[in-house]
Length: 155
View 1 (spheres, helix red, strand yellow):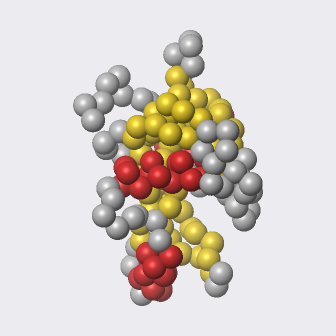
View 2 (view 1 turned 60 degrees about the horizontal axis):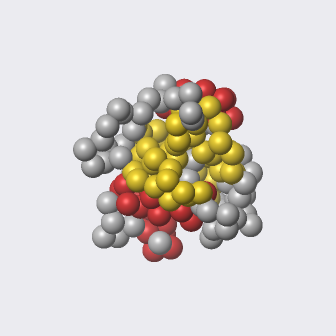
């Protein structure tokens, strides 16, 4: 994945837009209300959704599923189509680059007690509207605020 990041940074320096994939882990409570899982970023400790660079040979939704497992310690099934997209400014060592993100809903089936980045991140289940208030990226905040889960996904 480091090579993908290096390629992305080179493309960004040339003025090209770069892409990432994200998972929006969710669950339905007994009353039918929607909760989403946020995690803290490793560096700024802000709340974010699990996201990362596209992975060679893997679809966007598969890459998002892997990111959710690594960063948030959750397993589940991602819906085929992205729930939406958003853009943000990614902090790099020598500045910021603009990143376009395709966000996939991930229906959580299992929450792991221990996971790859557990020592570096905290996670929190919140109603989508509350999660939207904690997110700094305006487009992601709007996506979470307006989030609806399809009744059935023919995945």
